[in-house]
Amino acid sequence: MAELLSLEEAVARLVHDGDTVALEGFTHLIPVAAGHEIIRQRRRGLTLVRMTPDIVYDQLIGAGCAHKLIFSWGGNPGVGSLHRFRDAVQHDWPVPLEIEEHSHAGMANRYVAGASGLPFAVLRGYTGTDLPAQTATIKPITCPFTGEKLTAVPALNPDVTIVHAQRADRAGNVQMWGITGVQKEAVLAAKRSIVTVEEIVDELAPRPGAVVLPAWVVTAVAEVPGGAKPSYAAGYYERDNAAYQAWDEVGRDREEFTRWLNELTGVKA
Image (cartoon, helix red, strand yellow):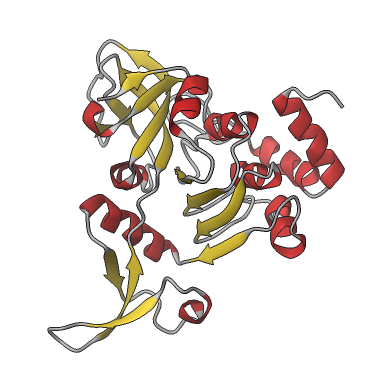
């Protein structure tokens, strides 16, 4: 059952050096505050997982938290490249970064397999691409019923999945709405989970199309108003496009990034 914890305590208890960590959210409800807390607590050797790593993963990589990234697309949405990600891959700064690239469909199906207790997922999506030649976790498989050539990808079972949502009640049941991506599947696939929320309420009022994560699938809930900024939280605040644009200048320069990192972590220059 979910515990109500501070974000600092949740990360301290549940995110360990060397863990496989997924911070999911598709353009919306991205758990940015949780990513910053991982940086502050100086976690190292993480395998980071995310369908669409954007600036919070650029920050985690630049801070030296990651040794591997499992993903299907990476960039600063609407702006351009992730410069800390690029620097790590091309120049091993601040540490070398191994990458494992999949398609969106492959990543989504890997989470579904993990949530379903299955060892792998099967799909047609890689046919005609060169990803199988680049990624060891994409393998051909033959359908035992039709003989069709398909592709298998292993299940994703993160040590800890972190997501952001709009609300939770005091029992730890979580409610989210709007664009929800693969948050539900990523939580169900994980050994442990942290959900940051805009607010904790006495009762979750029904909302059309809302997803509810029951308390028994969530390890910890932390109330973090604004915890998705600069992404957005439907019903609470809009996306801060200027922040994404500003990150391009910070992220592309090691000295500028180091100043940003020192400010985040409270290190005096």
